Image (cartoon, rainbow, N blue to C red; front, side, top):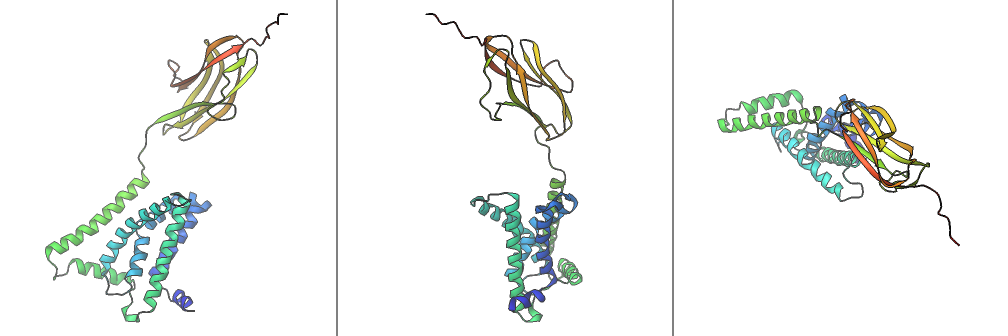
Amino acid sequence: MAMRGVLRDMPADLLATIAVPLMVIIFTLTPLGSVQVVRVPLGLIMVLFVPGYALIAALFPKRDDLEGIERLALSFGLSIAVVPLIGLGLNYTPWGIRLVPIVISLSIFTISMALIAAWRRSILPPEERFEVRFREAVRAAAAELSAGDKSRLDRALTVLLVISIIASVAALIYVVVTPKQGERFTEFYILGPSGKAYGYPTQVVAGESSTVIVGVVNHEYADVNYTVAMSLSNSTLFLRNITLGHNETWEEPVSYVINKPGDRQRLEFLLYRDWNFTAPYRDLHLWVNVSSGREPLQKF
């Protein structure tokens, strides 16, 4: 009954504190996660502010415990401290540091702190409880910045703290919205018929079909036209033109036949880029022993 009353009379700021992690779960762990316009701002608020605000609300439920600007600054600071600690704890669990465990853990922590804060406020006299009144908060912050009883140094440090917080948030948003491009490269690989990096057909019979799996992965941050070729002794056994976007993969089994017997024949896999055939962009090879397939006559 007591908890039901706490939930019924929960302050608006704590209801918002509970709503944010619930929305993060919806826009992260459901098909709505593709809506980046909502997901990115929610994620930033969840990581930078909400967990710290919930913790401060649980630790300091009274109106006079902290001033408004102190709550704001500590909410940012504690959020930046709490999130890595939760990640460090997940590192030693079977779930590890992955998206789903991090979102669920942060949500549980934030909602738990908000409920504790609501309970601690409910047992205080109404006149002592902390509550957020937007207009009064803005006026209090302005009055605190211009208070005559503060020295110039105190006011300067307060303004510097606010500017630092705003700059940090702006920098983080910029990094998230415009991620830095990594190294540009293309993966080019061959696998055995089983899809593993072993079991290559290096002992074959002339005239019989052999198969390898050839793969190309584009990490060039642009669409690229590739040409995949397979050759033996200047004779082309396979040729394919493909176009891949950034982070796209092409992987297919390629079958071929070698008709000429001989040991240590160089089977080459060549990758050309953007119709430039003067030199391969990437190249691989296998040394293949090709037998004639004829059984030697037995002498009696």
